[in-house]
Image (cartoon, rainbow, N blue to C red; front, side, top):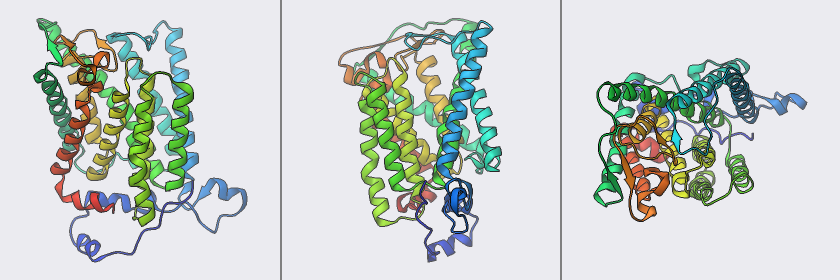
Length: 388
């Protein structure tokens, strides 16, 4: 891809920051992450593939995605051959055994693709947004944020009469068994999805994407949504693409330093929304919400220096939604959930078959999560606003 805008000379503020312990956000000023892929010393065919940071951004991202699909197909074929069949994507019941097999298969695919990508690029796995400071603390903070945010969403829906709770569905030791089981499943989910989007793809694209390449990739994602999916859910992809267009264009016009991070966030968040169109129960609000929370997770990487907060928040959100409150998640209700619930009233507020993620309230709650995230890491707030 074309190179990102060059870094500007150090300012007085930069000098002041240098006198104190290096803030998290400075990780994105490292040459290995945001410097240009172009180098005049490379000529001919070599220039097409190799830049000053090694393999060019576009090729790295393409190889990583191709390897993910290769390993998913390979492992899926193996599990089917030995009698472990993946669950039908149109099913409205999320079976525990099937969910665990799928998530293990996905995570192994990520590990295989990630190891090979790191080997090809000559990097270490922690280089892909996993090496920031206070990782355990950030993960725990993310877990608390995910539980609290989903609880606020469900409470607002219950207060408005858009979800009704029935009796507890589990008793005795089954409460603890399924609580632990689904915690493992959704931890695997968080590791896989955040590993793909906020670790590898975000780090790879940040190194060299510019506005025009980001616009082209988002355009391709929208076109794929138009050609490959049906129904109203895909509209959420278009809204996500439009929501990021003007801010990214402004960054491009103003030549904001390190704007490539925000271009990469736009691309990965839109892509994150797009992959959720494959879930049979999603409506357009749920798809847009997936893209929006994907962007919030990108912001968390920017502020904390790693994806661990996002992993914890993602896992806890899904666990609370699916197991604890027993609501639908993308149209599926899990076997072995604690509470029982049913959507009530207008689907714009209840989410209908989609569950809480399909309610308009989810957008306000996700924005509230952004405010809380910035408040928790207030010393990086100025860096976030200025785009440094």
